[in-house]
Image (tube, rainbow, N blue to C red):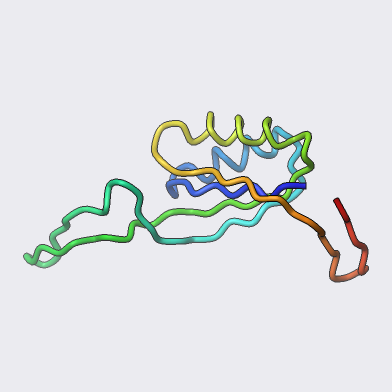
Length: 107
């Protein structure tokens, strides 16, 4: 199993969610986050004063998928969020536990 994390622009969340649903991803977690990449933020004006916005709003989408689905999930995320910026991370998952039933999924 792998944990696939994608950091995308907020306006791309629905497209990525739909793309993951088309890949039969059973569940996902979406979190509002702030950060920056190479762009390092931008200047903005509020009530006549200029200030730096260094941490931009982003969305983090996380899904645990079987090893054989990883490439399809990555391709779906990349095509859905192509216009814009972001990152995709793939992290190995050693074990998964269901809190209600105590069932364990071991790799």
